[in-house]
Image (cartoon, rainbow, N blue to C red):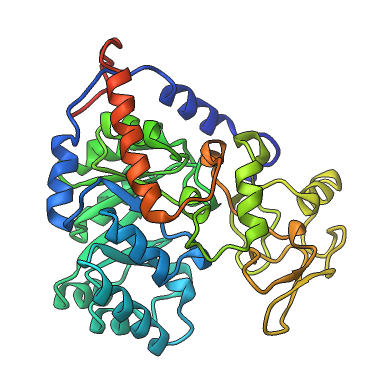
Amino acid sequence: MVAVGAVPEAADASRAVASQSVSAIALPTPRAKALMEVFGLKYPIFEAPHGNQTSPKLCIAVANAGAMGSLAAFIFDSEETARNAVSKVRSATKGNFFVNFVLQFGAKELQATLDAGAPTIEFSWGVPTKAMVAAVRAAKAKLGMQVVNAESARVALDLGADFLVCQGTEAGGHVEASRGLYETLSIVLTEAGETPVIAAGGIGNGEGIYKVLAAGASAAALGTRFVASAESTAHPDYKRALVAADAKDTALTTCFQDGWPVIHRVLRNRTFTMWETAGCSLPGKRPGEGDVVAIQADGTKVVRYEGTAPRPGFVGTLADLPMWAGTSVEHIKDLPAAGELVGRLWRECEAARSNAKSAPTQDCLRS
């Protein structure tokens, strides 16, 4: 399925569910509290592994504020850089962070990250081999897996996953899911039983965190919101675009498929509009194909339709590059320091609870 244009019906449906009033619940919920104790967290908030925009600096800031920091293996170009990044974060935090491996691209730095002391490993876009799982266990690290349906949840549980990350189509970047978050979350929670489930996709403020906790999740994962932070390695133009955007400015598409031809959610821009206007052409027939739209700091050229988001040092027509963004972009109005953001998100979550005290009970709520 290729979805372009307006935010898809699945996302609309889940956002409609999310907008319903929910009754007040204790914070943190019992499920959230259990997860927080395992990972040494002050808040049930995860930084989603948002590709090349993650960094040790951002991970450390999130972790030291009491949430769960993340490093994406995309930032590793060798085992040495993997060891250095993990060691840096490990020495500056309590160990409340994880390293994500997108299995479509392998996990060649897995052992190096474990040797450096990575306390938690998360796999997405694939099923880890028994050898990978054995390596994680041998290092006494925790194991998480991204899931998008009942079947993938059962596979993860059979492998002994310590937690599941349930993604919805509202997420920014490359989207593995085919359903909206709340529909998928209900399915995954049923399968998970006592195993913690982290909800991801379209969550950009404390109210969103509160709603997924009320729906039974053990924590909320936020990606786009942390891209729009002071410590993110996103280009300043990218960050400003996130602040200016709304949910309707995102598209779930395959436009920027060069390098990884899968569905992704991005901000609409000129490249997307050109492609959509031309009938969503296949590679080889796309308008402006081959145009050099930017140059990286090391001189590498970036061409139109390449899945490379702008980073510091890029020059050129950066607005034509993909800027990954989830529907949660509608909640982004500033570019705070990550530590400040974590505290604010939890205060907003508590405020959402206060506002829900007089709301009617929903049958679907879980504590």
